[in-house]
Image 1 (tube, rainbow, N blue to C red):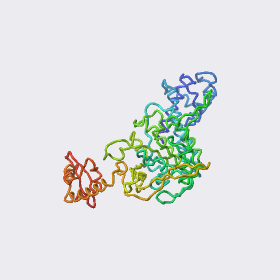
Image 2 (cartoon, helix red, strand yellow):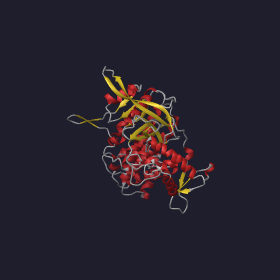
Image 3 (cartoon, rainbow, N blue to C red):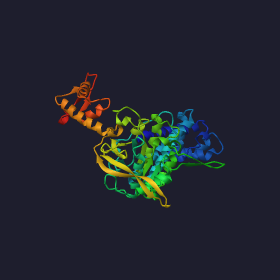
Image 4 (cartoon, rainbow, N blue to C red):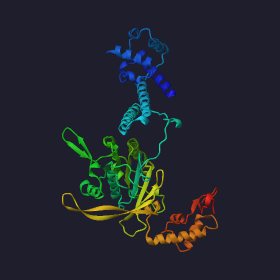
Length: 496
């Protein structure tokens, strides 16, 4: 803090000296006394402000008489004598404003742990965000590190809406192909949040009923989302569906689609007005990027990072939904999500939805963990049923309902590369043979593949990487080798 204050004092001296030595007073009119750190600097600037009137330059004689016999008057003479100035007063003004905003932001941050209520905390965070916006708009080319010393920050535990699946204050991403009931799944979770109902794995929801904001442009709110939400026992008074944005003009009010690029502040404003907000769902997130390209890393991060910040500010969970790409089998599950890597990188927890390997029905699915946050949750099975439902207006409607079916041994690889029952059986057989083959030690991966082929297994159809994992074998490139070798790990990490 001392270094920051020293820098601020030097900037203030440059501003004052520039005005005293002939710079235009009008270039400093955006400053106030409160922007200055030192008392004598405040007195000099206050006197300048009172005496300036319509003049654009400081009258040194009048200013000295105004200050009288004081340390501020002596400092004024020192500043004019040293000539500590430059030619870019607007630049110094912006730097002083930014330093002032940073000091105030730090002061508010110190108050945060002592806030007596969630509402007071939100107000402090709101003020901090406003100050940070000022700091960013007055920023110069170049940058400086924001450093937090470890012993000056209090630790806090990871918290969950649903442990370990929905971390509070984090972004969560769910992906899968279009037939895996991702939207019905998110509606089911939103309904549970709205009433405080138990979670799909049977654990208690300890947070009570919370509000939900939902963005889902692909499903109609009236005939699809609301009936699904009601059928999942959701409280419709807790659901806030963002249909679009109304733009006022002189001629008429126009409506357009919401985009994270243009309307993020509107979403933030809505979220802050809901003191009991627990969840935001954006499905699919690629529909809400505006002109941002979903394959561009910087573009995607520019819209996801504010979402992550909003989750942290309000202590809520935010779920974004995406799709899989068409990469070949065996690709790392984290690389199977469509678009920029930021969709997976910015999110703290990532899940994949795919066919349930334990069921034959195409309506049976499984949600697997690609990357957990503070713990990896068990894969969960679910299926959908088409229910004939009577709407409140008396008409019947066919609605998709999600039913959860318990835990599964499925992996993320099973979700991104689903296989038939026959293929699963062949993989199990091949894995057992591979395990026996590796009993006497490590072998090159090519030799392992040749062995499986000689045993009659078609590795063009079977995923050799999944066979290796089912066998419990690891893959490693030894020093000096140009190829990977497979081996069975022994207790303590040794190689059998």
